[in-house]
Image (tube, rainbow, N blue to C red; front, side, top):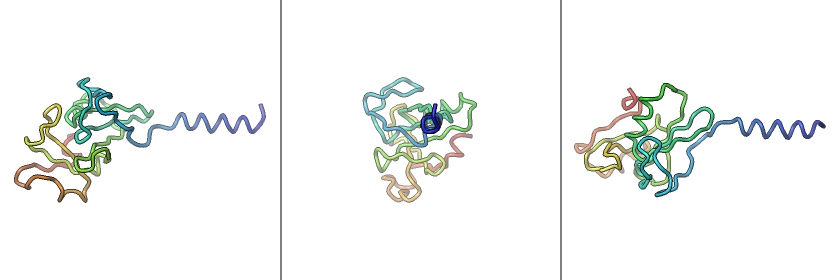
Length: 140
């Protein structure tokens, strides 16, 4: 085997071994929630956990993601949360601002949604109508 072939194989192997670096696209009404097995139908509440090996777990409600975390001892996962304001955009969990209100009616009735820090003013509820959380508060 020549040096060029060895180098090509090395590049391919390193690309394969690298974990997923960001969230996957969620196919609405096709992808299922890893936790509750329901079809994901609203990106406003969707979330994803990505393991160090690159395995992606998708969830239809932030409450399902939180249940998954409670039952999982691995702490090195990346967590991505669907933006309530910018549908289809995912936010890294530790930089998101979460809010809870009964008015949300999320798929599993967790009624938690997330926005980027700069979108807080776009939350469509009065501040007296919701409770605000940081990621560290939700995963305690």
